[in-house]
Image (cartoon, rainbow, N blue to C red):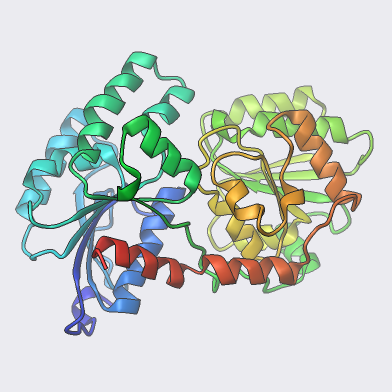
Length: 390
């Protein structure tokens, strides 16, 4: 169904969203969030939704939203930003009811041409400058990003959505955004896509994984903050007591070579599978194939989308107590949170889970918790109310 075929009603609103890239092509958490949100606004509420971004398809007639590609992702940044402004200004037609921004860098070029009488809501997915610094940029460049990009954009916005109290605190304390402007709405999961549809044995057969070995799964971008180096060290600590343990790691990133070298040095070649990019159709199968998922994050985990994806598939998940992850697990299964972010604490929790020294929720309990609290249809309704000031 394309945008022109949608049956709009008298209650339909015109909502402009600006993201980064296109989820099926660049499978990041932010991209998936925007992809899911915009389509549910259009389908569930018959809103006229336009998604602007970089590297979007030129046409997508099977979608209920309008796509506007503002620039190409492989262009130089000093060419990309002016192109964003020029294309955005050229394509303005519709009168808007709400504007929803998701990425400060791409929002900056269009700030001065956004209509003054339309409320702007910024979805704060994380402290971009600080996250960049944790991956290696200098403190001076991080200061420039924060002061002249992030803060400038935020000063133009009337409302903010964060995915957790943890990121609400960062937005308030580090960016001086008043609490009365901040709305805490967790992320959502597509419960029709992420679901326990097959047995663990069938899932493992499809992925060519061992049917007998105790197996962990994690889906992460291979960067510093996600803690995969700590997880590998934890597996090495566990191996003498659980000698057939297996860890499957899905994802790509700049640390791939270093992590593979670490696995070799720790003599984990027969205990770790690096799956690389895992197509979206295989992701629910991988969750179902694992005994546990694991999130060893060290910093800046504003929500933890993989946590609710795993739970929706009926698979319990072990997490470090970082960012928004405790807000998901503490009301449901606090025993699955590690005591700290260290490799020792991660190893201890994994061993406790496999040896049943702690309470582990059943597949049905995991699924029920995810569907009751993180169904995307319910989350999109809450987001829409904030966007429109209802």
